[in-house]
Length: 131
Image (cartoon, rainbow, N blue to C red; front, side):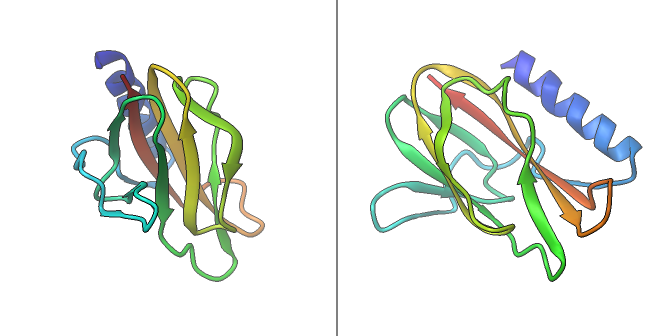
């Protein structure tokens, strides 16, 4: 667990250093914010620590990015146990659907970009551990 906390701390440090706002970096609830009709856990910025066994699918619900902005999922090569191959994403905000495929852990990092901007306006991270 200390490895992905170090990654989250590094992300927070880099993001704060660039002047972006960081939300959802550690300290969040491991309990889903809500449950979808099909039983999938729904996580949000206040419920940003996802601990599951392999098999269940889960949803990350991103806030509305506002007009002229969108959320983007950044590099996920270091996130084990989560399948992105069949991932479905909303346009900017809304529900992002993920599958779990085996044991692993890491950080899913979302950045909000305003159209035409090179730097993110906001960063939100979700710690994931599939055991």
